[in-house]
Image (cartoon, rainbow over all chains, first blue to last red; front, top):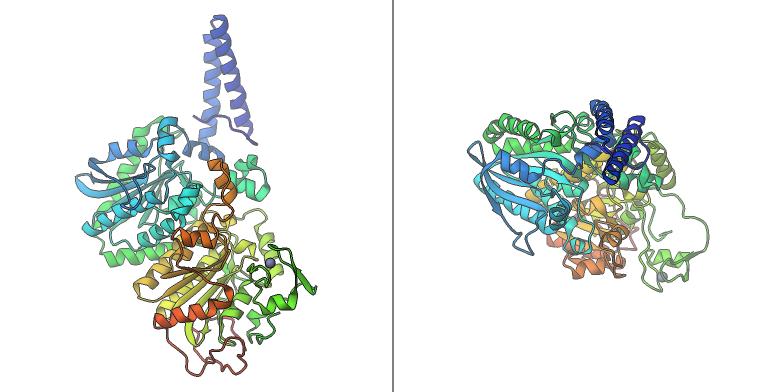
Length: 325
Length: 306
Ligand SMILES: [Zn+2]
């Protein structure tokens, strides 16, 4: 669910925040003093749900950021378990270690072999610490590339699931060359001789996302985000005020709808009302339907035509003009 | 400044004057250096060897044979696709400050007679950030090199992606890297030189994709910023973290080359990779008054005028 967040917020956010605080107060009161407040709490719950409904009907970009980062949002392993059979996980980059923030696997989709890669965010704190909150080290990108090479060799399509806050700002990630690892993946994916479908499922955080997101088709769940910098980071740099994140979320045009208008995203996959976590099966169903719709044609496209189209897709992105000075 | 070099004849390369003052203070050793001496020394501090940051135009001047440069896409600049608050003003300020429309200059020219396509990013223009125009110009330069079977040399100096262009600026990483990929596929050499500083999105794209990756001494090179790393790992980083020398030790670079030797080193690499050589071009760096014009048809050039 959407919870009240710091920083400037809409009237609806404030109403929701007040209601949630009041509900929490009544619950505590009822617990500590053994008073039956169930009726009052239920009334407030209904009102809070009503406000949430209004928010979901027309979520602001900052609401979408909250949905994309929602702790109960379906994770990569949920998607993989529902979408694929015969899943065989691959491990390690053969150079340094196995990075648990990145998944690489062989699998079948509708019986056909594919290679699956993706950022592996956890569902709880323990999982997230183990998987570095889905922020790969260089060895994660290199593992993904190794798996993509396997796909290329056998002409199995690569399906890449993007859900990361971004590359990891750590000294070891720098020392082991995360910039080079990201650059290498981007370059190699742009000319990988097999179909590549990218699905942005949650947070598409900058270079760490793009490192597995160059493909023939970019699909995006309705309440996922894709951005060059986190709204908090953008606000801190531009306005020296991280609490202006909501404003930055708006300015960055990071929602699926915005990105489709900018031609960065090819297709938006609808989510259930209120977000994927409210009905994970429905969200996964939208991903499955899209893969079923696109894979046959991509499999049959000659590689050279595929590569020409992929090159053109990224080559044309951007907005330039002739200077007036 | 650099007045032992004749001014390039192209209007697009004419530079604004240095700020007044006979003496410059070195930011590293804080010594006062006679400005003329600093300039004669390619803006490397004679006391401590600190390599001052160079505007793109000066980088090209000290790298290319005199009068050999023809610019590509001189008027190309980023639009404001997101209608991002304050962006047009920032662009205008940067244009006023640098006299240039964008944060990169690309074109072709010769280095000790070796013909090459070349680009130089300008940290003085919005931190050398890569928006649509920088990405477009770098990609076009790579395509020019490929189409004309020439090498590509890029001097980078950049804080990373230009966030005022949102995800479109992120897409420039893909656009430039894909163009470099095609250059590699075509069997053409690409030399990347990282200057102070080269960070963020530029490192995560074309800057690290060279056949040979070089850097200037002391250049800051890295993806994430020192402050955010220190906040994340809750430790202080060593002073030399993310310097060119540190990166060399970690295996991320091929060589660190002082500015005084950069031109000859690049020329040597171009020679090694079989770059085409123009006849009758003087190869001596400073005394280049005799250098003849390299007459070429410049299919990618747009604003080179005599
Ligand atoms: Zn000094």
